[in-house]
Image 1: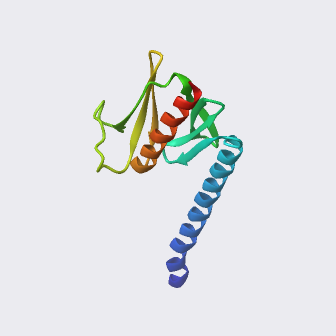
Image 2: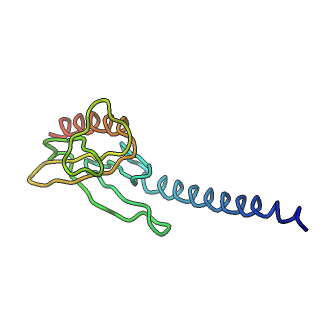
Length: 136
């Protein structure tokens, strides 16, 4: 009996890990369907984003589906800033890594897109600025 009780936590851990893996696979499948045909896309802990036909859209994964959080027309993009995720309007330094957000500014509108990796966000800044120049 005591040996069975020793294996019970392992069984529970296996069931929990299997359920988490199934949820992640479902999230990835939803993202692949949502981002199909996108010129630029990302999926991370901060959410999903895609660029289709000059329109940048981002969503969060909630309750088994992607919920739209906002959109921005790339041709109206004037400035992109890389900011710290939770400290107001503090800009992120070049040496910084980890969670951050992109602030898109243009046509009198500001929108923030969360990222879990600052290096990936920097690559997005370059891509978005190139696309905004191409669309003008």
